[in-house]
Length: 608
Image (cartoon, rainbow, N blue to C red; front, side):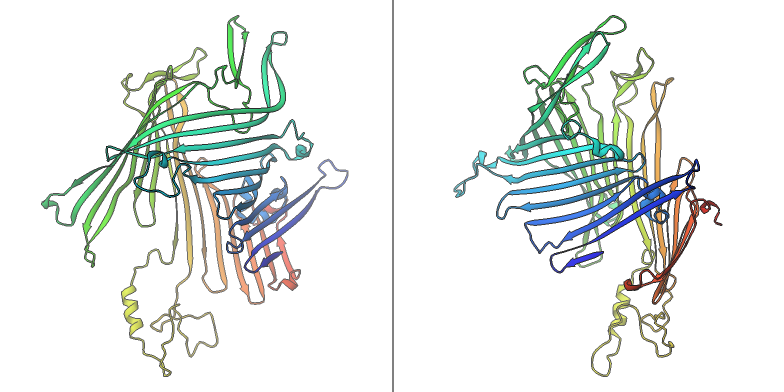
């Protein structure tokens, strides 16, 4: 069912009920399953109420629906392991910085029928304000007028459980709930005219309704927990100070390289920042507890734990921090001559290349962080290459148990270079169609359109769609003609390719004491072709690089029969080989006038 309220809202609703029976009653293989699916989509016109908006995207499906519904085999949703539903409502107070939002989220994992529900969720936010700014300013701006802050508050109530036991969970003991407040305060000042100085303080406050105390039971030789319920406030903060500027460098190529390149510009943006926070695990704050016990070797072991480790918003980290971070961002552009009226244009050689690392003075070991790099290249007008990489700066050794551990010895000290690539990856997608390989002839087409003689009535016919009427087409509307009077044989087609590649650590090499690199690739593609006006062919598939074969493919064929429509779908590879044929009347009044032929669960694998 679809609904629409003009200029206000629109949406659609779909519900499907499936009752599957396998085998005969009394036989060992007899089983009966009941599943259903609910789809709901709702959108609101932005002009209806600018201050109040509501949207919904619901895809709720029981765990066995996709496996038992044959129609799902021919839909891309069949390969989805996770289904999510969201209902959102937002209200903005007119002429105010405040806004309120409430959401309900449901996430389902079909592989093990796990359901995560988060409801109700309430978000209160205040956009950025300058609390000390004068309403009627005169003279220069004071330093305290540059201080700005914002606020966001979140209340959440969630539960993750199996689908069959979800409604048996206790609202107090099993549901996780809490509230979090966040207030960032910052300002930007100019230092020595060319350096930007930015102090920043971030305040976090968490509110929980329970905490867990742990202690060691010597009689049972195990850790025991005691949960107490009440109101608990957990807050922390971080402070930082950053300095940044821009350095411009210009290079003019030599004459023997030609006069095509006028100038090359390099923009270097160095940033130095200092950040720190106290040790929130100290007894002064009361967020952590500790106990001690004797292990199997008779050694006394002291363990520190958090009272709120399993809470929604976590707990402040252990240990104090005092970090200095350095980052260099680079941009390289070239100015070349052109033959147009402007005479020159900018060409991006390196859109962005960033290198950054930090050092923690407060840590007792592993003071250096990994080196993080990012590269952005603008290869074509519609395609950018984005690479993020992490470089490991420490070495590895074997623990007394024989497992690999990271040790406090840099690779530079070990003579292995500055860093080793530990992770990187990129992804891209592109769609090919009729216009991808065509040459642009806009100027020639414009000249031809200017030479078209006007009709007897003094007006010129519009043939911008490329179709020209024919006097001898026999009444066939499928025949189309180009602007020069010849029949147009162009066939609409498209091919979309999605590819991602990632590199990371794999298995550990005990001889070299290094992790072996592991390459992960994903490839999926889909396409369609329309040889005539009423015929349409389409497919979608994914390739498994580990098994070196196509993991899944779905093909479909459709034919428009004027008053009828005919579709045929089939899965030619994989464990769900099957087919489906459908022909029905277009009119919704006669939607039950149809014919379906499909492979069953038992004979679907040998249908061809």
